[in-house]
Image 1 (cartoon, rainbow, N blue to C red):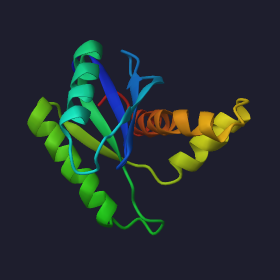
Image 2: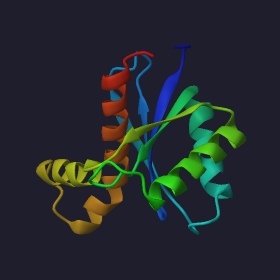
Image 3: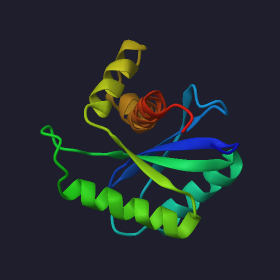
Length: 145
């Protein structure tokens, strides 16, 4: 893999959690939660992701894929894949997908175990924590490839 980092995204209709790998693709760090103004408009969301990609020299984007409990792709997966196609088109960066089942639940548990009990505080950081889990899982499964 070329020099740079991987960007992990937890894509949702209201927010997009973002996490970035270290240059060696070993660890992931939460960056931000991008607030979306409208579920079918992407200009500001793409602009925010573009800034991250430029700042961190992103060479690949990993999108969490919201598979059903049975592992089947439903409507939400189609929306996520369409967003991934849009990222490739607008940014020219390859996109890969990672099963994101249970990442939000695990992220909430981790945040609460870390001492944040206020529901507002948990909500503010859960998307980027989920993006960290998506990216960490991807890196464990794929190594430096």
